Image (cartoon, rainbow, N blue to C red; front, side, top):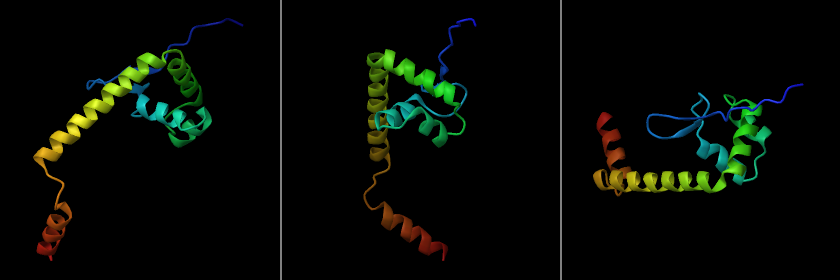
Length: 108
């Protein structure tokens, strides 16, 4: 038996979002599920594109680098909040239901 170091299956896309390997599943998603009490098995079942062994490696990485990962997650939350504010300024949510219903009734 030989002991090998396994690479952490994380990759950063063009937008700076950390994903699990080549999947579309984000690190945010896996960490949130884990924090809510999901096991690695449960996470792998919920996201079929994830392999169980990769989930364990990612969770191990998270547990060893919690401060760094939490800083990344906080930056992501701040960015999402900023984008939401900008979108609500450009497209005010108030009255959206009425506008959609009016548009629907025009189509008849």
